[in-house]
Image (cartoon, chains in turn red, green):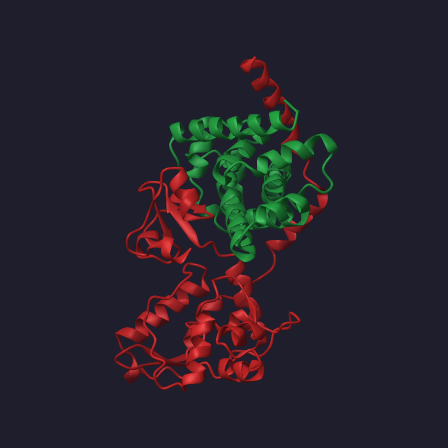
Length: 238
Length: 174
């Protein structure tokens, strides 16, 4: 009886998963997509001036990078931003220093930092989050003056009607950042070591391309024999 | 017919005709896997398009020790799995209910029970079932695509089918 049931299940599954013929529209889309030239978003980094205190990154603005001001922290920030813009990093480990920001702005920026990679929230969400739901406009202003854009992801805050809202580096880049985050995986396992990391962890960066396996959650990875990385702690983030 | 590896070598040199041939050969199978995993036709087409694009831009990194189909399925499943992660974190809570109602639309009646039963199967096992039944991939190929051991493939498939049998029996289908 068991055998009969298994055969019927196999038939059902084969029928359900039957492949289709490739639609011509898909082939055309695929062929077209290879011809879309896309500039390297990481070029943005060359135009950034990054400042740091001894505690962390305190200011990122478009401007000439002052050579004298470069430190270990600014170099780390620059490198992490390049990786982020290339879709090789989903979190920043360089410390930031917001101590010069007014208390209200700090609360707004802290709330924005809670928005997960690849997601967007309305300005009203941030206002509610800081316990001041009527301060939507003030939230917009505070985000607009974000001293450390990218590191504090103010680009993940959009208007309630789905509109972009403003962005320090321009609306085009804001849209591209969200698109970038929507197509960058967050959890990556290494098929050789069977360790799962957040994308951007040093362990994950050393992986060979053919060892990269994406997971939807740390639990999923565990279910097929992977262990979470002890360095980047994906369980805490996911 | 040109071997798949030779075709990939041409793609690696930027040959667009070879790339179009690759898309024709594998598009349907990739679309079936993505469609069943993601539920919506539009999302599936996006995932397949992105997979082919990654294939094109990374073709130089392709190693002939991999079957082309295995390599393509690895790329596609990586994309689909991340899309599933995004959906579950975006909606939080019980997204399964939502995806059931949306993705069962347009399915022939006889598939609806199986579709809903599949929603009860844990993600990794569901993924393996889709790959196994769309293309009849071997345990070894499945293991390589997901970076897991053959024993894990077997136990996940067995567990998935066990759950399906239970669900379908409850619905009076099996």
